Image (cartoon, rainbow, N blue to C red; front, side, top):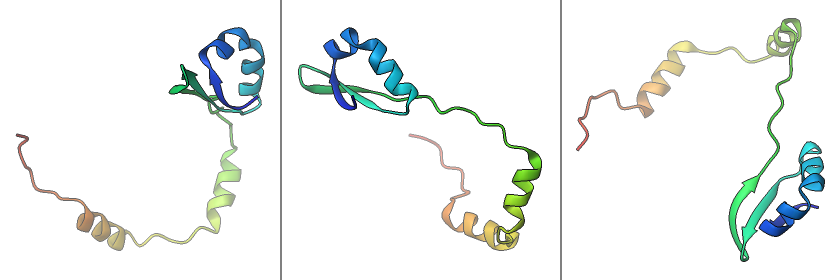
Length: 84
């Protein structure tokens, strides 16, 4: 069961839908054939050891901080403009 489900299906098959959510499925809920919401599983937090993260980033490219600052300054307007 995945994809679109009606409000009635959600009410009548909530147990089956909850099990599908645990398995990672996402649903669009409809009422009278019109989409009204999305039902999706929560992202689970995973613990990653610090050593694993350090090893992962060991091969990452270096960051040129001056170039990064310049790029951010180029796209971000630093002037203060009052809202209307």
